[in-house]
Amino acid sequence: MPVHDWSRVEAGTFQAFHGSWITHLMGALNNGLLPDGYYALSEQHAGMRIPDVMTLHSLHILAATPHPPGNGGVALIDAPPRISRKLVASAELSYKALRRTLAIRHVSGHRLVAIVEIVSPGNKDRSSSVAEFAEKVESALRNGIHVLLIDLFVPGKHDPHGMHGAAWSFFDTQEYELPIDRPLSLASYLAGQIPEAYLEHVRFGQTLPEMPLFLEYRAHVNAPLELTYTRAYQDMPSFCRDLLEGNEPSVRES
Image (cartoon, rainbow, N blue to C red; front, top):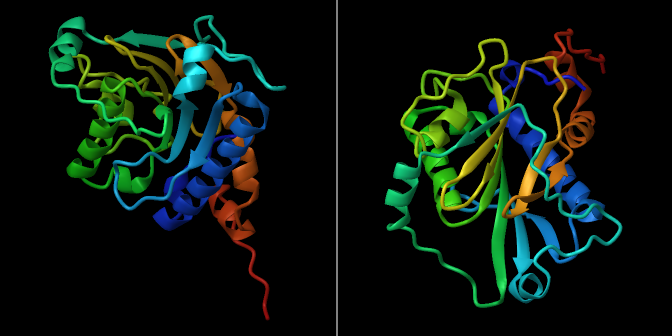
């Protein structure tokens, strides 16, 4: 299914889609895509510091099997992701920031491994919103948490280089240049002493590729963005789909 221009509808409409997409991603990951010991949970929150989707892993399972086998799903992929662009953070910036890292872990034995972040209009409505979102991604990577970022909104005055550009500015002195003809960003970040970013850019009307979701260092599963996007879109009311597809909404007289 082609990516739609969600600026055609109100922010609340996208928020409803956002919630449905998260749910379908959670279901796909939990029903065969994640290896044994991993699970995904949708998290409700009021602030920006708690992730949308959390992939958690038990520490005792991690110690026993660094790359657990799947239970009918795919095993972790150790090969490099097949992706259009790869960026490696500036070593100078990364090592300097390492001295300020503080990781807090829960005594229950579960640790946060990865988060999926789907950008909403509210993340781009002002400079402080962009900064808060970018700092959240940066903080996750500094603390060893991998991130999959999905930004289906064109860059605006507060994020001229897209939300990936805003987040990656913590790791590179050069401003990130988006492809003019493909302004929507998909970024999979590999946490580490020197973080890496694996990038795809798409345009409206293009289908979404699978993106690597890192669970361990250089080991990932492929997140089915197209399949789950389609399922979430089909859940939307018909009048919303009409607006997004450029059709006159059909209204029945009572």
